[in-house]
Length: 367
Image (cartoon, rainbow, N blue to C red; front, side, top):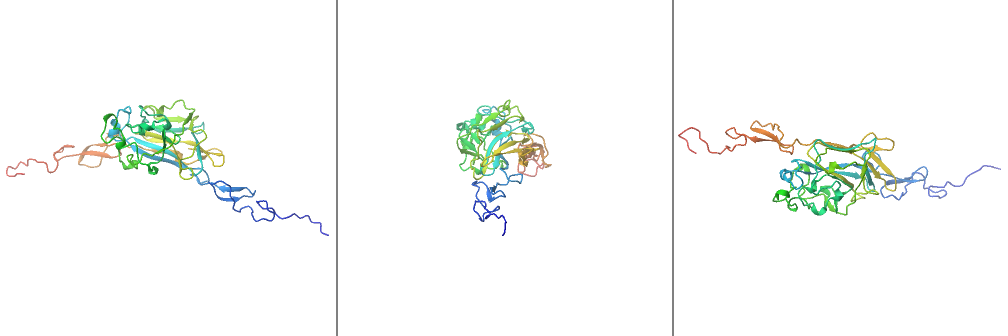
């Protein structure tokens, strides 16, 4: 007589006695944004999230800084925008690039993680019709003077009725540059915002980075003021107790694909830098906190949360173009040192060029 206690068949992860669905078997966690779903040791179906910018599964793929425009002399001469724009000033757009399905909940500063945007000169703000947040810009006035390169914070919107996208992703042309522009205070023929500097990528006359779409209202919390986006006197925007966001968070224009959200547009002729922190919403629930430096606990960091771009020397700055045949070399505001060519009489920028009539002192020659 054998008195051995024996169990029945092993129940698999689907509850079938003797079944074959064991830990490691493929499954479906019902999350469309994960891959390689499989049962773990506890028979929970777990998928793998996309790889983030720190090399681990997560939602932040990085920040994208787009050079949106570089101001030229006609832009700088306009006074409708209060006349503070400097020739050569660069307009930057900052996008948060997320994995499919993630949402952006807030961009913030905290006691251990100060948020900063800084320039070595000042932030340009179009004080006539500009706003501190992009959703408040009147979309029907983007064709006026330099309004389209005002500085502001946002959560997707580049104006009331328009979503901001990288110019290379803009499918519908432009409403702001060249023939679409009113020419500003000087009624410039052909309009303003026409610079075709290759350093700014696609020309604004070709694509403006604006897609018709209802604007999401931006909420700001904890800021003493937003002077950096309202005046032309500020060089630093910082907080360790404030944030901007959209209630409930928001995904990009293409949430299942290139899930990108515009969070700021900044125009300055100075060296531009930032350190940003943000909270992302995870598909299916939960959050991820990404900080510019010194992550603690579950916080994570990514190199693109910190940025520095050294600007071109200001227009008119003395320089040396390396050409012995020029004088009065100065910066043109676009990182080019340009001198005046010495003419045949040694005059910088003079008119006595080869082919110009002269007197060789010989009475026996003509022509």
